[in-house]
Length: 130
Image (cartoon, rainbow, N blue to C red):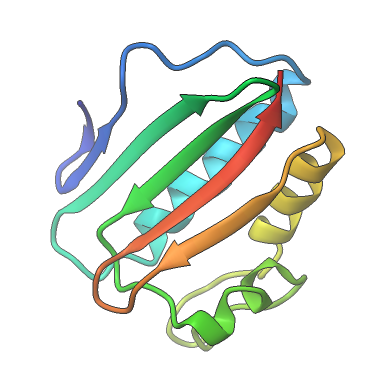
C-alpha cells in the first residue's frame, strides 16, 4: 500500500512484472490512468488498486478505483479524442488522456477496455505484449 497524499491510497502488489517498451510511454499509460482515478473521484478517500496477471503471451493490468463509475453507454466514448463525461465548468480536462493511453497500448500490441458499474467504481484493464 502506498499512501501518496491525505485521502489517496494506491495498493499494488510487490511483484508487478517488468515490461519492455519506451519508458516514457509506459509512464504515460500509468500516469493517465492513475491521475484520472484521482481527478474524477467523488469519495473523500480515493482507493486505487493496481493488479497484473501473467498470460502466455502478454500481461493483463487492471487499475481499479472506488470512484463514481461509468455508465455502459460511455465505455467506448471515453477513449475518443476530446471526449469527457463531465462539463468543462465542473472538471478541467482536455479529453485526450485515454485516447493517448489507447494509442500507446495498441502500438505495443495490446488492447484496453473499461469495466464499471455506476456507484461502484471503474476498472481500466489493458494488455501488454511480453
